[in-house]
Image (cartoon, rainbow, N blue to C red; front, side, top):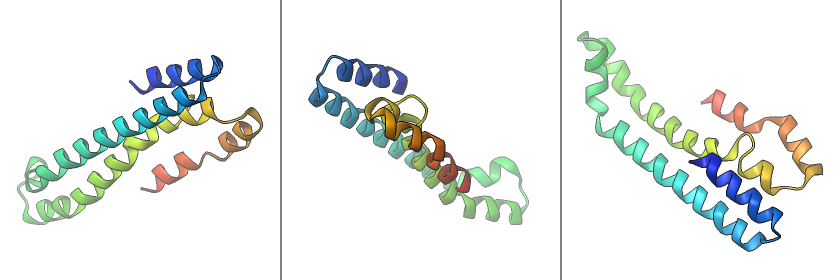
Length: 115
């Protein structure tokens, strides 16, 4: 889904329509937000069930239940990483000189790996 949006953005920029490309970026980020909210809601709705799926030991269930919000937040943040990484929005919409500097930093991977 997000690679199709990346192609749409690059095609619009290549055609000289930056306003339409901007709209495609907004739609892509909105879709990522909706996907992230749905993932977060799904994980949190099964908050007390995840621990019992792994074990029936009380300590394990308690620990997994305490880690569920962290996993849910990570899934939400990761939903924004997908459209912003690789050859997607950032690499198709920024100038070439800036593109090289940004892609060599790999900030997105550093943030996601830390979570």
